Amino acid sequence: MIERARAFRPDLAFCQFQAPAVISEAFPLALRELSCFAVHWCGDVRAPLPAWYLRLAPYFAVTSFSNWPDCLAVRAAGYRSEFLQIGVDDHLYSPPPQEDGRHGAVFIGNNYLKFYPEGRNRIRMVQALAAALGRDFQVYGEGWSGLVPSRSYGGHLHQPLDADVYRAARVAVGWEHFRRAGYASDRLLRATACGCVVVQSSYEGIEHDHPHVIAVETVEDLVQATCAVLQQGDAASGQANAHDTLTNHTWQRRVDQIESWLS
Image (cartoon, rainbow, N blue to C red; front, side, top):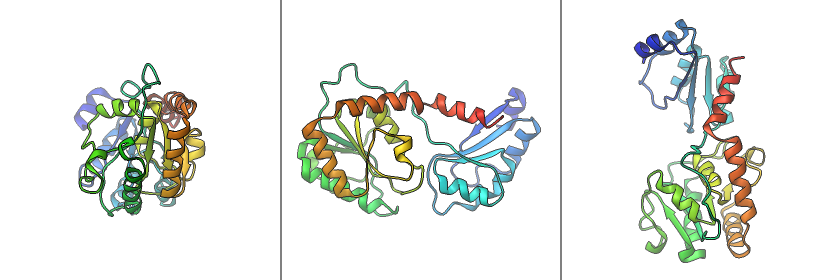
């Protein structure tokens, strides 16, 4: 990477390292010697924040996260940190040509049992929806076999096949493993970009980030809201989701935000 940077001489480097011992301070120092503005970004939550992020923070121009608590932790240590939400690939995720074929509710995400703080609630959500909706609910991802009826389990799903599932679903549900200000998985962006009505576990700031998403506080509220949408319909909400996401949450918008940090 250092050799390529010295040959290419970039003005801006976007670096995503989410595991320790991949780089040392030699890499960002080499970028600094080239007068390159280097951003270190993490799109997931690591709890607690691993010490190596703070160890490398002095050598990057910005250390960035998709949740606010980690940004504030780096700032408290005296280094520059900026919030940067994950983006969506608008070449893969977009609404279907016609909206009249949508049916049922879907959740795409893995089950890590109770490893994460909200893991138990994610399991409760999936099981409650499978019980309430029967064949009108499908879950895709690893770790669900045996926890829901076979009729509700679609197995593991790879990109970009998930886009086809979202384009066929009326409702997409989401329950994050962490409740953190600013944080949501990119599945929220994929679902909204495809024009789903989205019922999602709430986080601080969601009403600003995604004004057309139905944010809920409890599993019971999520099941109730999902059933209500399926019974009554809410196509306008799904269309508004797609417009908002494809306008404000593409990777191009994230690049624009990063470039604003240079000024």
